[in-house]
Image 1 (cartoon, protein in one colour):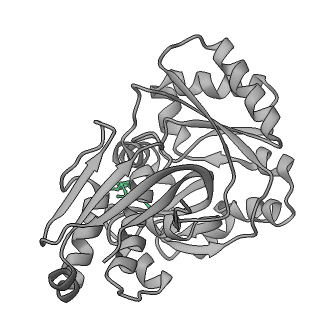
Image 2 (cartoon, helix red, strand yellow):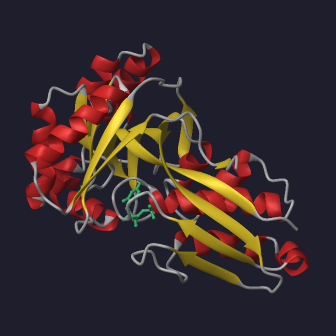
Image 3 (spheres, rainbow, N blue to C red):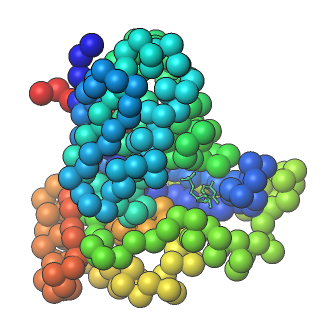
Length: 315
Ligand code: C5P
């Protein structure tokens, strides 16, 4: 049985609107527009011959045990397909981390998505993309999108996907303070504490009709209108994160002052991104932020919008 190396791209949220409580208890019903970018982890999967799952990662912030989503993805497949597990044996998962951890960029979900795609190949399970996405949804709301990638409207708790037209030639500058991380569960719980009185009731169609605005973003994407996409960036979780994390607000303000197409916190943060229409402009904005905020703790990346989800590494 052969080894596989996979590329697992990060995502940003161009749009994140919280509609109400989800019928799947503890979650929220969302309307999101998700976008893959070419900042990616690399996942190596190696057969190890015994019925064991092992995780190694070059980043000490990433747990190497059952708390790792990539571990849980392998464990889920081992439980769902015990015959394949017994026949082919276990797997060593080596994660080469490039996506920052707990950053709102779905790094852990991307790794788990890569494990599902790679183990399907290793164990010759022949699962379809939607079967892999159903398995992924059992582990985390962002995993189905990470498998497919590209640009998509995500509804439900984020696992129901409608592909949108590819957005080529848009670039993103990402900024994150190294020692700052925000728990996704904290962000959503805090949002519920502060805003649940505005939630739409489960079957209130009129409330959804009045409140859900993702349609304008979808139209801007269909027209490939970068300026409009920039104007329509939206993330409800900023309402809870910005007051508590002034560093996030500051990054947003600095990006804004540089005249970028648009800027927003991604997902539950704390990464802030800015959109540009060229690589040269993205590199220039990155340098300008570096000069404006002289903190050794600030990490910056430039990435391009990507049309792909999990793929096999070409080298
Ligand atoms: O699905 P995932 O494990 O990524 O979600 C992490 C946490 O974020 C959940 O436990 C929940 O508190 C919150 N969440 C939510 N509604 C969603 C997705 C996540 O409330 N649609």
